[in-house]
Image (cartoon, rainbow, N blue to C red; front, side):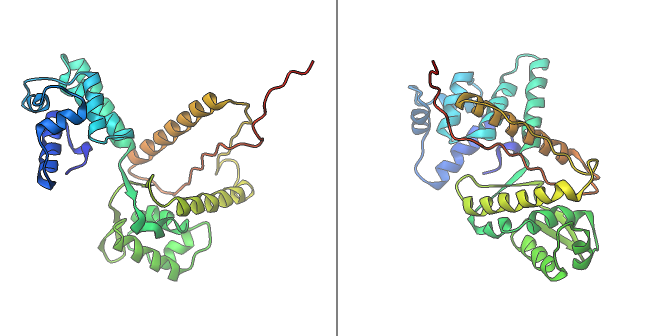
Length: 277
């Protein structure tokens, strides 16, 4: 089944989901409705036929029954809002939100078969650098990297990125990316991703003295928080990172590769307040 980002009509998306489930095994409109919590066995069939609509509450029920989470669920809600819009302004607002979500999440989720991608900084950095240098040799790539890497290593990295589908080779030393952004799967690669975070943190520490203030940006604050404040701050950091990715995705003529490390971690134990009388 196609990515949800390929849809502009939620009726068609639901129909394709049903058809795909039907193709893979026994599945019926009755079962679909039951999983979504609807008493009518043909309600969703009527929705697909345009004879009924999904309200916000019903859209939430359907999204959960389909296993949509995070940005896919968010996109589905806007897809429903777009389809149900009663005027052009509401339709435009939903369309713009759909575009924003899709832009922020033009991603490839790396699974366990691509574990190697997170073994070293070399893979994501050279993946970003490759389209910028058509015709370049592995030695050329190596010389542009701030951290040391040999030409032989670059050659091996490029071979892996092509074989694993992260890059597409268009000609003699000419590469294009297959997806704009790569993220780690939530269900796999925890050890590899942890190692990547450590390596990038070490590189960030070196960058403090290695580059002038106008070449790198560092900022920080020490805060006292509780669990509720922690959760809210984490969501803000995630939103900031998504915005940065969206800005980078819109940049068609980039000339350098950067790394963002967003870090928020405890520097004390949790302290139980005690009365000091």
